[in-house]
Length: 151
Length: 136
Image 1 (cartoon, rainbow over the protein chains, first blue to last red):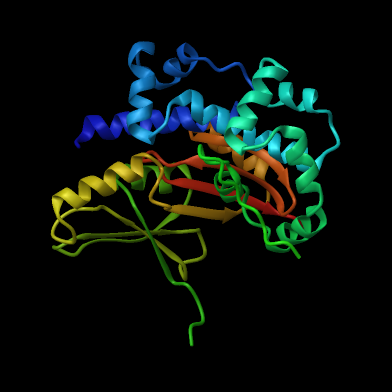
Image 2: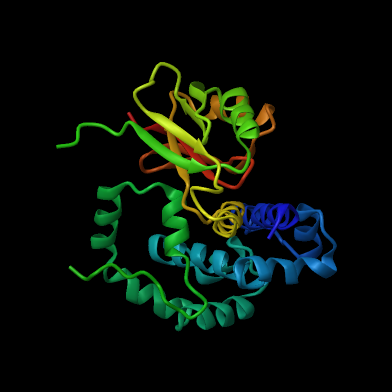
């Protein structure tokens, strides 16, 4: 590991930050590679080496995390939420959500609603800065999701 | 028992660059910048608050092996050291505009949160920084 690798890490981090921020935009590999100032051909592999997953998967997890939030905290339709967080079609959204969370969006919503008041009170009491909430409520690729203890 | 936090520490990859950024760009002031011989003791603080120092430490031997220092640098540049500073401000949006004009790399624009208005940025190395205008 030397200066070149550190610079590469820093560029990949910049792209990951961009995905965290602009997840609702249609981000594709060429657009992300431009942010990193690297060629599209090398970008995905370099990102994966740096963070352990493909940029596509990272972006999916960010979008699904946002979708989980909207399913829990709003009454908006699943289709609305799908487009809001950057998915191109409800079918892709449902498949990706199920793959990452382990159940379909509607089942997740129904289940989480049951503990909503308890969770809201817990979060309000803590006032955790958003960057920590964002990082720690993101679903892992294996479908593990933070679940507050039931009251 | 304890009555204050006086020093916190984050890793930086270059102390001159760190000084430029934390003082020249973010507007903190130098608490101490001393060549101890064995290390450069470089701290900064919020102007008017010297009671709370942030040590800007460069990882390297003999405090740690060169191999370990490389691992630390790798984690810093991946944003994974957990080095994270959260400041408070009277006016989040105004501070954001000021710092953006100075070329700061923001990760989040000012946003309303349950606890106030805040936004996020990175230092030149990858450390995470936020500043919050607390809800009154």
